[in-house]
Image (cartoon, rainbow, N blue to C red; front, side, top):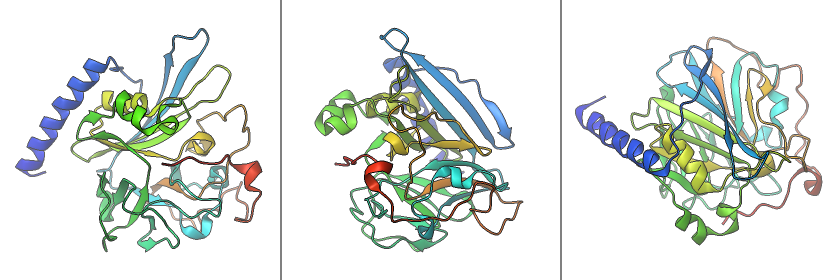
Length: 302
């Protein structure tokens, strides 16, 4: 880390701490070590409604850990369920990623193992998590006009949550409308100012006793954990986080079966080698021609 980067990290860290304290969102998480460089935490937050809570699942990844690899499932796996990946010993964790159309075209730049996806749309409108070789990742709130040649794995979201230590506000959510203000299940990824630590966050919702979060509350939760930049990824019934082959997130009451999604972020053990991402015990063929009405709700992605 050079001097300028160090100064930026210190300044952003101070902003994050101040903003979190002002929002009343500071909370110590009880981190459990999954393996070196990876920790998981469950956070349950009470609400003003009796017997109703928020339930958040966190994954913290040390990108300096040499035997970790970050990947995005390739386009020929579009339409997979995350349960298709359970049983693969190389996969440490997985979380759903891009917003997508009924035929699994993804919104925003999408790159898997240096291969750009075809059929993508709304490229420059979608903030990104972009990773290069050696786990060099960055949140880009404004997508570039053209894809970069050194991108290894990239996926786009809809709406930035935290920008240089500042969380989005209720006023911003109000301008966005129901997509931002409604307490949906949510999925998000973010990084600290040093870009050493990557955070995954999945918030459950649409359950009798568990409701989701509007975007500004999701942002405040991330800011409180020292996250300097974060992006909102696909949520609702798509929200799904698995760790060591087990689903951490419970399904919405109105959608009990796992949803088929366009792609997923994967955290891999690079010391292991398996012939296929879908080589686990629960693997099944991918069939992109599905009954959309049964598998997903209509998406609103302004």
